[in-house]
Length: 192
Image (cartoon, rainbow, N blue to C red):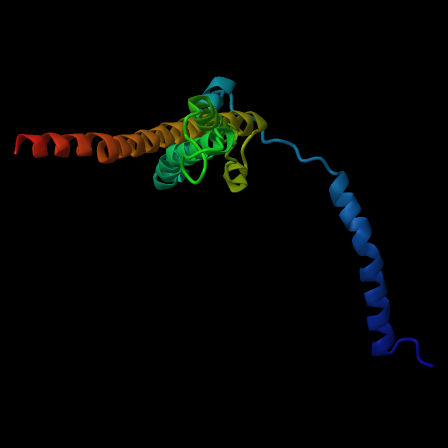
């Protein structure tokens, strides 16, 4: 049997490559990555200011206004619906009422609607938006920390602002459509 044949050479090469790869990986893991030395002109405050400016700009471009307005428009409807269901369920009376129930319990309505509204706004407020991690390639740890905090703060303020706009728009529409417009029409009918 010839030991120096092509087959045996390839087998030995494959064995060496197979068993040497884990050692190369372990050697690469044990090396520490050193940070690039900072220039003398670049201080921590400049890095923080740049991170805050970048985070606010990225948060403004990443924020979807229409989703926040839509969430805001749904919250009053959700709160009013839960309030009505709570008033119906908690305001039970054996005689009469709507489907055998009475809407005469204002505390149940206000309580259920209020708890739903506060809970919904709390969920929206407490949700933390995470910035994309590819924005941190080559950045220092100070930059990443300040950027993440500023990004979440700006996204939270934008989200709450536009949710409030959607909620107030929905409430103004409901008020106009169901309270003001019928009153105006009744007044016009009485004049004519």
